[in-house]
Image (tube, rainbow, N blue to C red; front, side, top):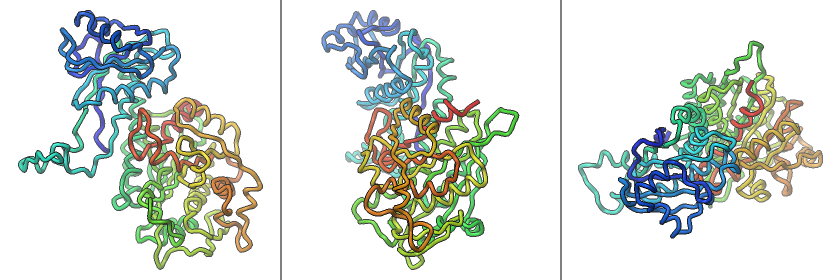
Length: 519
């Protein structure tokens, strides 16, 4: 993982850092700590707020430099609006916005005082923890391959520091945030669970951001294997095992690359129930690089296809989150990891392959490869684990971005209850999904004269025909397909994400499990 922000919790009366933020309710209404700062500084805070028309509205800020009587270089008042109207996700987003305000100018350490009206739904300790999660997510950057710090780039090169360039490039900026609140021990305890989820998000971001030359199928499988440290049971199926088992569709995608395909099976058995529990199941498309194969993509923008494993990254990050917070659930995550390359051994348009289910597929376009991977992995998941449901995630189609842009992921479901649960989790986390139609008319479009089905349905409704294709492999299992082509990479920036790889979906699915499937 890339460098993480160190977050600690302290009491309101503990000495603050030279850069300090104070969260203020709408009014503005100052808590005891803010009022104390104001009194010590001879009302410099309230005077600055009045002069700057600071009312404490949500995310409104005002900066005060070297306030009188305080050992603080820069103090930032950060509005939170009306606490009684804020949701959990609002506090997370505020934490990200607050960190952005504190780091607008360079600093290595900072303090943030969280003191709000206790009449809100969440306690102050829980709010402080949520703010901390938002700050942690906002802090994320992918600077692994930077070898020069800003000072070096500006010409201040010191030969004696050559060996430290890479480390300084990554460590530059804020690296420690102290969150001050009334009950720091309770806030710290609440933060442990939230940090586990945030770490899962950032793992997913790391995987999507990693270039394909260093993250092939074997390397991705090795990253999944690291979850064993958290208590996840990880099994890697290599290409020989996949061939023996009959993963014909998945292997047809992998056969054009010199890098062999893999399937990672990650099991978290966290339930405390005495009776055996069916697991919940998540499946991710992991195409580490997608050239399109013989049906090769245009050169412009092809570099973004290192992110075509966003679904698999999400599943891996989710399994990390569930294990890190010791979720009371049995969950299994499966990812099909391949590289889609053109070569003398690559699948040709017009080839017919036999999937693990026994159904035959006419491959008319080798750039519609993700559904082939999902078909086999879903078949294997249902046959082996008999799960309560399957949710698959894939950066599957450009068509879903045409329909929904980059704000929403497309959701297809054969089960209304599961779809409603995911929609509620979406509303709670702000990771937006929009239910799209499954219809027999779309299914007819993938019928083939030469095989049981073809892998494309024509020009129209490309995201819907892709979903119809996958549905042919789920049988009667409750199932949701999420097409996150627009949200997993190069998504719209927000208060908790400034990264190209967004880690989208980890918080959504963790919330689904927490709200509906933990006993």
